[in-house]
Length: 381
Image (cartoon, rainbow, N blue to C red; front, side, top):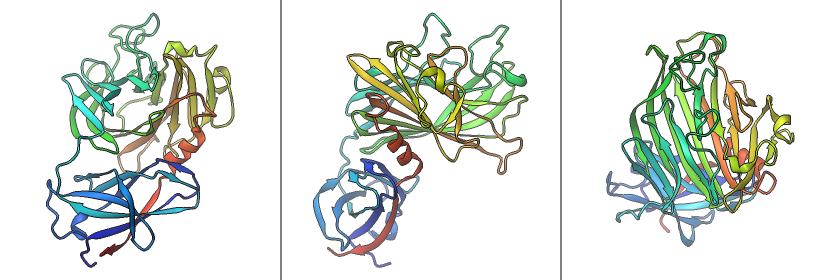
């Protein structure tokens, strides 16, 4: 391809209305920009038309060099429509990142626009967890401690439940019977921490061990944070493990212990993708998503748990273990894996208001049907 100054990219909304939806595509700048210098050169993006004519101000974009991946947000893009962008190379100091990750000895602080979105606690705990997880009025999940089930903390991944079928228990935090000795998810290292103007992301290696210290599996966990706007915030998690060397049900769970101020199950609003409403009604039902909300701070906020369509056993099995003030998605690995890796993808959509006003179904469709993007041509404009 001719080495040109601008590169034109086309995106398509597909079957979903897009509102500042996240776009990610493979992009290899050396194919288009002969003067590209790793670590110095950057990419800038402008809105364009189908002929490559540029108009309007620059659109924030983010290039991840290790993945060769370019990301930005759509703005408003209606079902069935397209948009065009012009990409150019610049050599300027990068601006201060909108999304930042500050690493402390035992946790990560993940912020947007200099305000804390979440803290990821990874050391000195039985299993890592996110708390707080802030909507614009405050956290939608409970912190450590509490009068009942203190091991239900924030938003977290769990394994095994209460030892169903003999599986290890990485759910409770006990050294003694009847539920212990429990296993742990142990942080090993952060493979990558990414900050930028479009999203923040970390990649972490962990090991899962039984109560006696025997290895169950290794895991690589990826967590990405981005906002459609201040009232619509997203945390997307992918965890990929080796085959669990364990017996029994070997269940994997994605869990949120809700802020008590929401008043769930009696007062808060609970609704799933199948149109079922109420905490008792949605319990032990399969669904694509489940949304829970109520009073948070001086407003109303909620959290929707998304089960990705690529997950085994999709749609997921939603329910609780022990208390109705939490919600979990449950999946099991197959008896034998095809490629020796087990992969699950989950999303947490943190929003203002409750289900209908938060457009939960639309945002779920955006999650499982990403925007399609392609490079069209270079341009001398």
